[in-house]
Length: 99
Image (cartoon, rainbow, N blue to C red; front, side, top):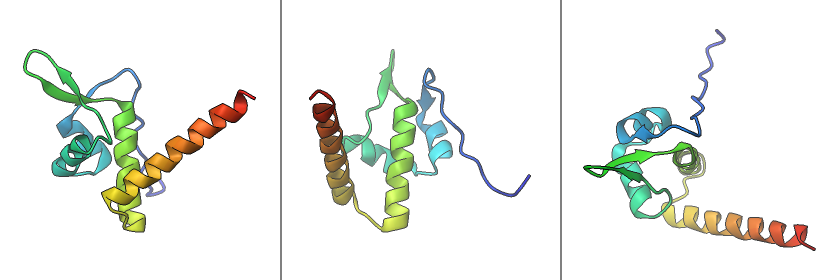
């Protein structure tokens, strides 16, 4: 082993509990709940008690947010702007592809 850590790659067909994604992402439970409240990720509520679960996309988004916050000291308002710009770029790419 070369001493490097490797990321666990989430499976697209698996749901993960809040406790598990805190381990997989390194984000705190509080941060993850804030990301939910701010609309960055959407938990899946499992019946009958509405237990929160998260998919592969949520894990990738949390990791991305945590990286932006750690490496560039960007707050959530800045991350929201970045995501908005990325969405606009994707929309423009689709529009250009349709020409």
